[in-house]
Structure formats: C-alpha cells, structure tokens
Image (cartoon, rainbow, N blue to C red):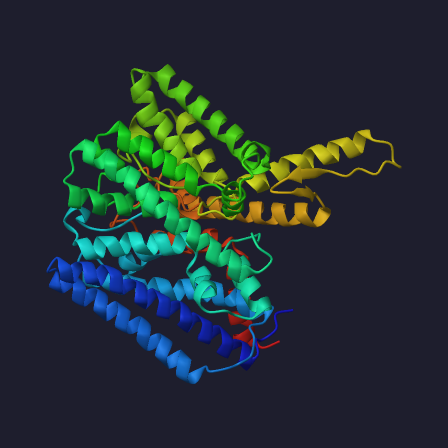
Length: 500
C-alpha cells in the first residue's frame, strides 16, 4: 500500500532541498569569481543568475517551510532524490545561458551527467567554452562525487534518523564513523587533501606535456575533479587524448583508481591499517575483475592487430578498460573507434567492465565490487548447502574493514540492487534501439549512462532523439542514487496524487 506523505514530511523535504540549493548557489560563486578575474563578463552574469535562482529557492523554502521537526526515514530518502532533480535544473541555468547547448534539455543532460559523475555530454564547441563555465561543469562533478546531500550533512547537522537516510539514499551503504555527520565531514576532508596532491601531480605532467603554467593548473584541477570523482568531463573535446602524453595518462590512471576505492578503505589506510589494502574483499574483487577484463581486452586487441606494440595496447586498450571499470569515462581514442576498430568481443568486455563498476561507498557507479563478491559467494553457499548434511549449520563471512556475516537479508538486498542495474541497462538499450541503433552500441551507451561511466561509442551527441536524452538522464539519476530513494520518491508522488 502506498501511503500519502504527511504535510509535515513535505515541509521537511522542501526545507532540506532548499539547504542543498543554498550550497549549490554558493558553489557557483567560485567559477563566477574566476570569470570576473578573467574579464569573462557574460559567463560571470550567467553564473550570477544561476546562483541567484538557487538563493531565491532557499529563501522561499526557508521562510515557508520553517519546521523544527526531525526528518523521518521516508523524508530523508525522498529529500535525496528530489534534491538531485532540482539541483540538475538549477545547475543547468548557467550552462544553458552560455549558448553552448541547443536546448535547456541538453543543459539539464550535462548538469545531471556532471552531478551523477557520468561524463556523457551533448555540449556544442567545448573547446571554446569560457573558463568560468568550464570550471562549473567540473565543479558540479566534484560536488556530485562526494554527494550534494553529504555537503548538507557536513554543514547543517540534521536529526539522526533523517541524516542517516539522506546519507544512505545518496548511494552510501556504510558509515565510516558511527555518526553520519562525522562520516560526511571525513569524506570531504579526504577529498580536499587528495585534490591538492592529485592536482599537483597532474599539473606537473601537463607542464611536461608543454602546457603553460596557468592553463596547466586550470586543466589539472578540472582533470582531478573529474578523475577522482570518476566522472568523464574534460576541458577539451578530445578528452585525455588531447594531451598526447603518456605521463598525463599515467597520472589520471592513479587518480581514477584512487576514486574507485571505498572511502572506508581510505580511512583504514589513513589510520595506519595498510594491511586492509590486501585483506579487503572489495580490493581483491576489483583486482580480479580488473585483471580479467584488461587481459581479455588486451589479448583481443593484440589478436586483431588493432594496436601494434605494447605501448599502444596500454595507452589505447588498457586505459579504456581502467577508465570504464572505474566509472570515469576518460578516453584516449575517439568514440566511433569502439565500433569501427575494436572487435565485438572486446567491446563486450568494456560493457562488462562498465557494468561492474568500482567499490561501494566510493565515487564510482555500477553494480559495485562488494555486490559482485557477495553474489558469487551466495551461489557457492547454495552449492555447499546442497552438499552438506541436513543438520549442518553453515556460516559464511567476508572481510570488509572488519569481519562481516553473510545473512539472507544481505544477499537479498544485494540481488535486488544488482537486478535493478541489469534491468536498467537492458531497458535503456531497448529504448535506444527503437531509433535504429544496433543493440551492441545501444547496450554500450545505456550501460555507460546507468553505471555513471561516460565512455561513448558515438551515440551520445546533441543530435540524438529527445527521448534518448531523457532516458539517459533518468538512468544517470537512478544509477547514481542506486534506485531505492528514486523509487521512494515516485511512491510518494503517487501517494500524494491518489491518497491511500
């Protein structure tokens, strides 16, 4: 039975959405300041208008939805899903006003792609985009990677129940600290420290590649924000291929791998527990799946003679697999080369790598390594049950920062989310094939969108049908939030319209 939400729930939801928009508006001031410093008056005005809209939204909700009630479980989850939709619309305002998008729908597409750390884009003439607007594209990716609701938890202390559900609703399944507020703040501390280190490493590689110091600093900041948050935006339309530098590619690989790892694992390492790097079940699973997909793809490319020599295989083949598996979407080839030069089996391996994704509680998307491991263990458990005596009591554990028990509830939750991802991959592919695209290319693009990757085989463009754009927006939104908060928001809307 779908229950209509209480009026108090709606007030609390709108109040917290307003707080998200307050943070989003404040974030727009940073690229606006850059535009003012560079005398980019029109982009600065675009960003000011966007920030003003965010502040107005917050002001209205602050005045009309003033309530001291703590967020309920339902309100916390629904806040997340609604916040991302509203944030997409308002984040798209300066993008649309830039004149580099054919429609507001296109601007919303890139805004959701940035927030969901996907990286698919339908922008026109990216190479001549203003610095301020370009920074905004990457900044929303950085905000979305850590979680826009996590920002609210960092600066606005919410009630324990609502805070927990807001945190879980944004695709986070575990807490590093008992208190989610402390967990949210730790995530931002880690991210900012890595930003300083990672930007410096990439900057040095860009200087070595020949970029001027100031331009190199801008590019390195953008590349780190997109790479660490496993997005795929780049300052230039040719992605990482633009730099023609193996050092830039190696630096971005390190950042991508850093971003695909669990924040809880980062905490363990920061706390001095480096043994967790080789004991953790997610690290082991990622090692196996990354090695297997890379090996098969490399052998396939070598067998077909697509790229001669070990260096070309690494820079063209291995790089795309790591980029896809980590959910980043950086590319060192053109999208159509997947279709025209890569063998079908290799292209399929890229789809598998994208669909699997990175670690739980990271900036990566996809099914996640922890679910892959538990699903495999669940199959093995059922086999052992068939072979064991009826009276035998079997317990199975896995190590993820601590010893954990595999229960029926854990397996059921894992299988439900895994099924949602697989179904979403297939449904998106079916929608794309309606417009005449081959199923292999449609599945590639659908998986990239829903797993928040950003690799493209050429389908994503400003000229693709509006229904495909909307489908990809929904996939990016639902895939980033891991479906449950989205389902709950839909149920609340239906309940509001129908009542009990």
